[in-house]
Amino acid sequence: MKWLRGKARSEQTGPQIVLKVEGMHCASCGLLIDDELEEVPGVRSSRTDVRKGQSTVRLDDEGAADHAALIAAVERAGYQAVVAG
Image (cartoon, rainbow, N blue to C red):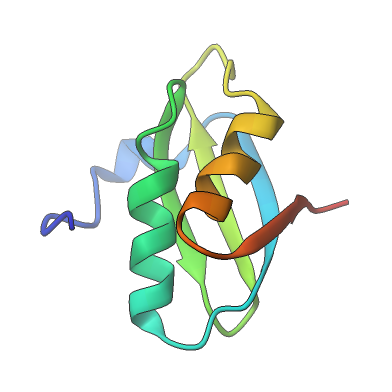
């Protein structure tokens, strides 16, 4: 698990993808999902909001992360996801 959350404020800009995530129950669920998503090539950071049931994934400037790879990362963590609207 990553202990250093809250990357630089500058990383909160740029392309993003929002995923609707099902099956989360607590903050630990969100951390597991963020850890998996941040391992996907092209992902700069991930912030999962358990209450909203979504993950906001910030991408590298190229925005090259594949939607299928992001969904697969969430599934590896044990949850289900779809790209929101």
